Image (spheres, rainbow, N blue to C red):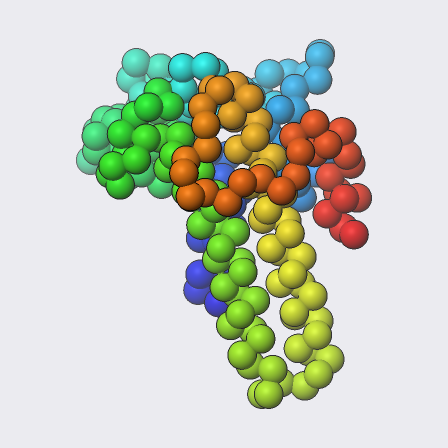
Length: 200
């Protein structure tokens, strides 16, 4: 569980190099929409994900901010090219169309949906693993960890739903067939105090 936990969190919070998607006053829940008037743009999630109707990602390549120049070769060339950039970092370095074909054969939009969902499924798997060790640990420890794993799954669902529903409100694309549909409503997630909501 521990060996897979970091990747699960990346999957359900900030896949493919996206980052800074959290709420404005804490980092416990999603807030890719957070951009109050008067706040410096580079302190807001939309500045970092650059999602628009055409695509998503921050262009740090030579044709964008050229932040890729700070890397030594061969990394500079590796990250600068869309076809050579490792997919886990792709949207950190490139703004790509929602229809961009990924190594899986899926579109970028479908791949994002798949990865966010995979993160949720991993957290559910952690719960199943932990349930299997109940005979081997004391009741108190089992209960405490089980409660934390349930919370992680709920948090993962909120992150998946909040981010995907927000990006869908921009790109107007349908969710791929077979994907578990969001449980939460975007407008609700935008209104609630996420720190308080996720602490319950």
